[in-house]
Image 1 (cartoon, protein in one colour):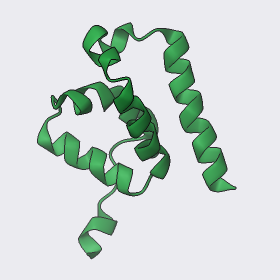
Image 2 (image 1 turned 180 degrees about the horizontal axis):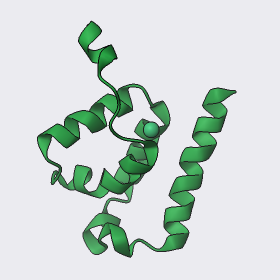
Image 3 (image 1 turned 45 degrees about the vertical axis):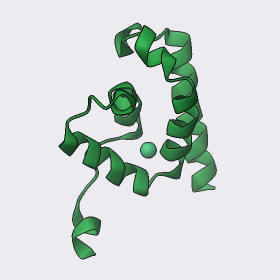
Length: 89
Ligand SMILES: [Zn+2]
């Protein structure tokens, strides 16, 4: 599966956060969804984050991404940062 390795991530973790609502709602174009999946294969924190977020997915229905309160957004970003820090050791 060399092909998979060579393919570079188009999404950063920040980008994943931005796309999560669309992803959970199934509104993501299939190529975007594929890229997101590729990122997640190599990024356990994002998978954990998605699983957490899934439980609160009603947030997506109530708010557009732009409307997510800065406080919540900050929390999500901190979550990702912390996860990455732990991963790095
Ligand atoms: Zn990630």
